[in-house]
Length: 188
Image 1 (cartoon, rainbow, N blue to C red):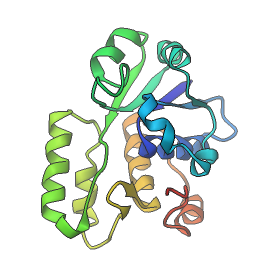
Image 2 (cartoon, rainbow, N blue to C red):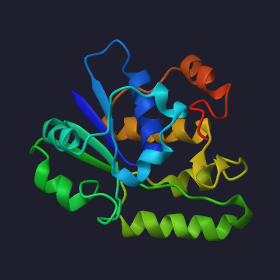
Image 3 (tube, rainbow, N blue to C red):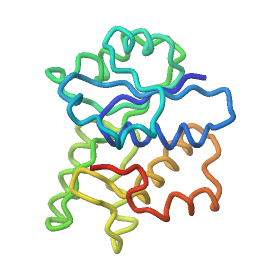
Image 4 (cartoon, helix red, strand yellow):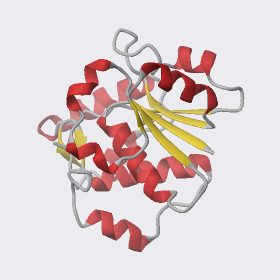
């Protein structure tokens, strides 16, 4: 089974967690660079994630053979392939698409950030509603910065994706290893 993530640093981080989830399995988990504008953001922090595909043509070939694509809807001016229209036209018939939001959340403007996230999720028709996680865990700060979630939020998103795919999530002991560091991935 080939699972591919397409999107920003959040998608790359989710890809890493799925690679950890599928250690010692026959799953292949990749992350595709959605466009050249993101290249300057790649650094040592993303070295934990394996199978990063940076080349455009390799990305397109990967999309054609995937079984599951988990992606963020990215403006066509920034990415020619991280959008529903292209993916529907290019993927194999049996490939499942799961759309996740790009998370921007400012705790200094909690209510406004929540409404904006809900609006983006509705506009983009995302399969994962991260806004519901912010509401569920309202008493906790789930963000390192307005653009970078804490480990706990990433794990909750992984859990939601696992529920959609009907696959097992990490054990409690595995989660505790990750949760020892609120920035396990080392996002800048």
